[in-house]
Length: 579
Image 1 (spheres, rainbow, N blue to C red):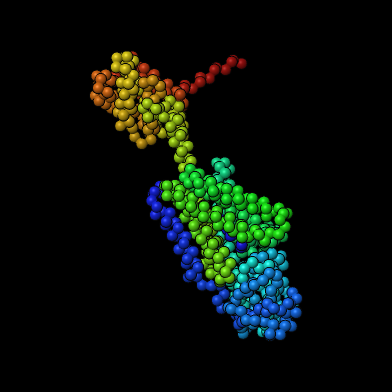
Image 2 (cartoon, one colour):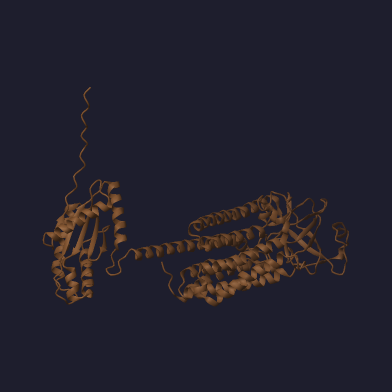
């Protein structure tokens, strides 16, 4: 949100306080510790045309005024308005050598006219298309040719303007650094937003669109506020809207950011009332203001900045309040969003305050704001990535739950068959061994009839416990149906699988004589089959099943290993017919 004028997270209150403390520390250091821009401003004295003198809005007329028509003002770098309409100042430039420029910082909506004899008067705004391309638009640059006084006329300025006289080479060097910082932030925001939009093409969650829209509007506002948007080929058309265009972008950005934070941090579930107020004030309220700004009525839009700033202030307070409450209640994403948003709000507020009171904008604020915007974009993108990971985990948990047998906790039939198919495909691809072990509980119907289904269920759980102790990493166990179980053993040939099956059979016979307090004397019959070169998953399952039935017919409580299928014989060629 911008001023219209220009791992598990621990559930501790200290997290929210740390986020606030970080943001306020950044803002305080920017306000108190940062050096002012253009401290050596090259200006000796500023005088303003006396208020009791009616002066025609013409630079030549102002230049003909006697000394008595001017009065000194406090400071040597500030043009402070005291009335509406165009106002004029006379500036005495400090002695200097070489080519120098008069810089008028942060002009925004102001229209500035400069008469620097012997050069003719020139009028510029930040929105002009024909500004000198050698310089950035952080300030309006006027060339100086003589050592005499210069006359500056300003109209439509909404707050005091600061001026400086600097060598042209120094201005170009400072502008180069300025453009580097802005370009780095622009590249980072565009790249991250494109990546997030790719997330949206797959996940179709509107929070990713809201992120991209919010970052795009924040970036567009930054470029307009610093003037660079009006020098870019694809954005020059924004200049025709002037200051109301900047207001519209800021207002739409407030609405987008409000909806985005509500969705990202799940404020509706974690902080109901702040989220509702933020939705109506920051979201719908900003959209209503935007509609009034774009409508032909009322024609005079001077009412908009104070109202827009008030809505922005309330939205920021509600956003921070909602994020703090949600963070306090253990919402990890809200805590990270708070950590990203507090510095951004603090620096944008500090910059708006400095501009409004005419204080020098410190470099920490001037260039800290775009850097903090990039930091917020990266941190919020990481929160979105965490959201993607959480959704994937929830999907995996749901899928795993759907593939699990509720009684025993092992895979159900569809789950174990899927693992078997995958294991057979991998065995063929890697030319590795694979075995399947088919188990069936002996006399299970008699146990159910004699002791009840509860004891029968306990018997199946005991078999799963005993068999699970023999499984290695990468092995799988599932319940095929009834009292039948399948073990998939990648990397085991039939000898190793037979040994494991024999240990399971012996463990069941010795450890499951009494189950749930009943003397069931439980045993299992087991069939083992090794995957042949041309086996399918169904063929391997069928051969292990046949081996299990052979164990049943052989007297139960035993292990039978299926023989490997004979390779297909080569076809015998038919004798050729006699000629």
